[in-house]
Length: 176
Image (cartoon, rainbow, N blue to C red; front, side, top):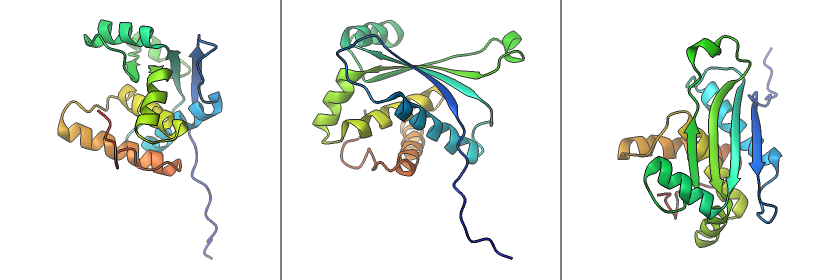
């Protein structure tokens, strides 16, 4: 007997801690951040590119001053940027007693994300989703430092964002 009813694919959750120290900065709801991060985890687990386990990500919302300081300190670029990722490398001694696999921290400059969305004629939510997906992929060692790596990362971003209902972020305005 054939069962033709399609069950929704499983979603792999990820603990997401969103930290925003600025009351005057508008950011998406915590639920959206969790949805975006979980979409990356789910996609990679389903495609056998990531182990199925419980993960944790911290997302810190910063202003342009903090973004510039971090970008200068860690990337030697003295300008603010939209998103930075800081992967966490769990010391081997703690891996066995750890309840969650900590992926790391994503730092997002809300003002830059908002400005970029307007410049690129995208909804702010769409651009936030892209920045979070992009940041999580960086935490998982995906990069865009050369053309081949960029192609892989952009294809993953596009597929994950499409599953979330967002259009291809690279169609008109490639991310640099």
